Image (cartoon, rainbow, N blue to C red):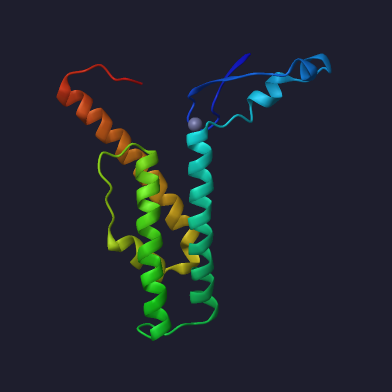
Length: 149
Ligand SMILES: [Zn+2]
């Protein structure tokens, strides 16, 4: 058994290494650097899945030069609303938000600036993580408890 931690969230993980690997001069420390817990792995997979769909819609918006307010534009807008809702839920749950919040500004921003989709998504994640940390600190302070982490 080797003790390690998730390279994303830092949670402690224990890995059972096969004796055969060890006998062949296998480097367990190399493996430990690649460890990801199930929660982070699922999050990354689901996140990339939604991001890929958003990217595809953004490419359509950019390349097809879709007129604002047209039928196609409206359709893409509805897809963005649905995808950003799913994304918000995924990101906020991963960051242990007590409630899931979604704002139409998120999907509107993608409609207005499809060429910046990657940045919009990255900023959203950073914002969600910081908000969550702040919320946790505030609730710990309110409860008069020592921080858990
Ligand atoms: Zn993790």
